[in-house]
Length: 374
Image (cartoon, rainbow, N blue to C red):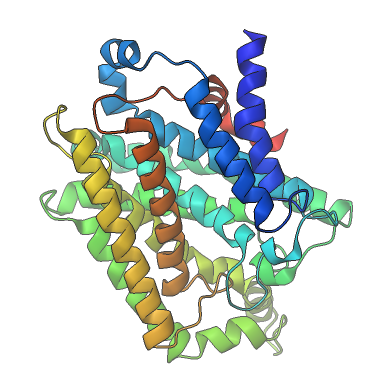
């Protein structure tokens, strides 16, 4: 039905394009657009009750609000990447060089978060399988997960250097990119889940506990150990007589943002999975899961915002995407959880039904990687 697809594009994709560019006035434009979209949502017909009756199982196992959030991240990231090189893209939305807040700073973190939210949906069965998994099987699983990401990272590195595309070394470094970070995070998650399934009690929230320990140790290095100053002002080359050590050292300092950022993004991934098991995938009666999700998402949003503002306002820790520090991790989680909470409320209403996810969003979720590259 091309009419339905065109309607969804105009009402769902086009507003994202308008809001992320300077096509609308700063304040009045988005406000008018939001009012128009709210009115339009009541005008367009949708059979809420029949959807609830026919798809009750999918609402629990594959909730539409999560599909909408994930597809929105894909769309907004694609628009930002394509528009950032043109004057129509506001400079205030670009990635920050040192510290502060930028719209594009949320892109990589949001992909890590939605990966954690989706992965935690079957974490219980996966954990029991990991306890019986051999070391060789676990290594094969890591290779299967990491190899495509590693290949994509190499392809991006070659193409960026080959066409001499403008790049900011303060983003990930001289040679590093997000695919290498994602490769390291996914490989580390496979190894951690193997160790956790074999040697740790599954009754305790080990993901959240390990995430907190990693974040605190990393933040101590940044704040007390001189890590933040090294990331922002350190040299891009090493000096010395040992050629082997010199090469390894130079690779590290040239790509310090990306390599050290693995610790922050791994903490973010672990914390996302732990939070999702509590807020998105609680083991409760399906008849009460909607209201419980709404309450817990709201509580999590408030908690993340409170922790972020305490660190930045009270303790004076600068929010830094470049170092992927604790304030940045909490800010990314607060932003995504708040948006997910609003989407959940909009799609579930008073908890009597759940609206279906739009067809165009379902397609983006199903073919996320091709959509992102095309």
